[in-house]
Image (cartoon, rainbow, N blue to C red; front, top):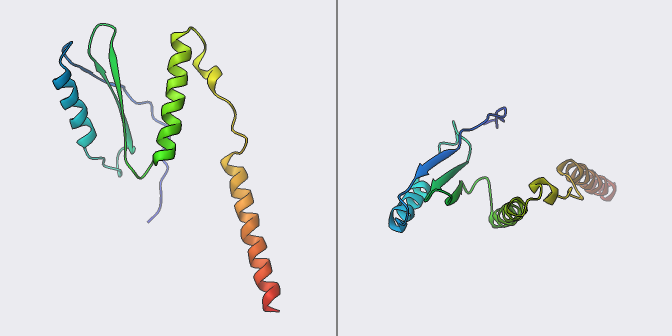
Length: 128
């Protein structure tokens, strides 16, 4: 099979109203959101839902299929979201919290290719 990368698509934010104080209703709605399966052939492996629980109170739910994330990735996402939220609440630009990564994926790809070529070269030398 072939992996297909779809072009970027803006996505509507799913907002669900929950009656203020209805913690059971909120818990059930979140549980249902988490239990809803993904169709990875037609939709992304993640979804974001905002539960409005009051005039100025919201609960953010991010559900991801295990194929697109792991514990490390979720931890990074949670820390970055917390930093963005804190910056926004304190009147700072949330994007000011983003630091450039010291290594980009393409750097790793080049390094990995060099390692593979070096290993293959060593195998050839050993053979002869």
